[in-house]
Image 1 (cartoon, rainbow, N blue to C red):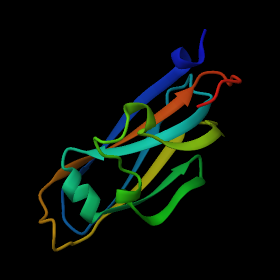
Image 2 (image 1 turned 45 degrees about the vertical axis):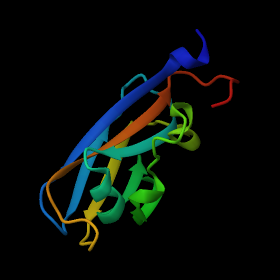
Image 3 (image 1 turned 180 degrees about the vertical axis):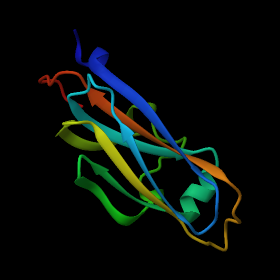
Length: 133
């Protein structure tokens, strides 16, 4: 099998239902995932995610992004090639495959709150190869 065909792409959603709240969610990666190579974050309301969102992301208790890390730093726009839209995290052992997200919505003058969805995508590989990400 080639490298491109060994990539597992998963989407995990969390609903932001109340303003100025913190939401803690835990997701389980596909049991066949051996290594996590990247993450991406998006929303059904990119403006709210951009202005209001911060998060902490952990994989198996290993911190990938610290608390209050701004969502805008993990987002990509339409001017970015689809092949470049993930944050590469190296080749992290998926271990027991537990992804924890602590997402915080905060008041911002440029974005009035309405409920929105935040989606976190993970990109994992089934087996480590010598191909580049």
